[in-house]
Length: 106
Length: 121
Image 1 (spheres, helix red, strand yellow):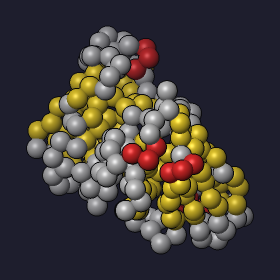
Image 2 (image 1 turned 45 degrees about the vertical axis):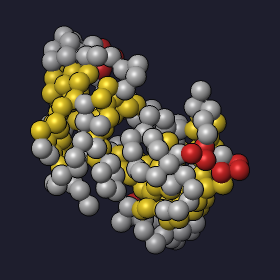
Image 3 (image 1 turned 120 degrees about the horizontal axis):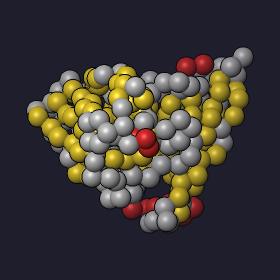
Image 4 (image 1 turned 180 degrees about the horizontal axis):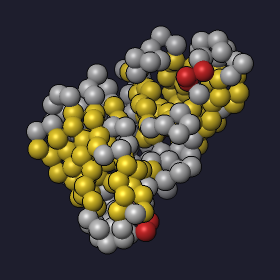
């Protein structure tokens, strides 16, 4: 199985900040990586797919990038609605998720 | 609009069986692969199973292989997850999610609201 190592596990930030979350795959997954946002008691929401393609309807403050087996989700100008938990997921092989990053208010 | 509705969750004892259903609407169900993903209380997301649109392939996480079986009835726009020999560590909210093609895993834009399975004596 491909292991996805996501960091940090928790991130404290303020409204207006730019934050970065990283996922590293244990082997190549090409560009087959997605990012999801999840709020308590809700299903995940797709933000980014194919490493850097913004899902329709998602704010352009969210962006994704890839370099080899390292993937990054960047949220610019953090808004109150962005405080949530974020997961990466590779779907190159049997899908696996990262451990999650909780973005909380500083 | 796309809707996915899970049902069938509940409380069972270790070793028992349970069948979950996911009923879809708003898209051509027979054209898309479908996933089951679970989330234990307070924990992260775990992919469980995937079934291709035409049932030519079923794929499972190692943690459930041989105990869980995914199937679908395209005529009823419904997917199932038959779970046997349930363990306490199977306790989770189970989500169904739509794939983005008929054949490959893909990402998931659409998810159900989840159904809770509790395995406890």
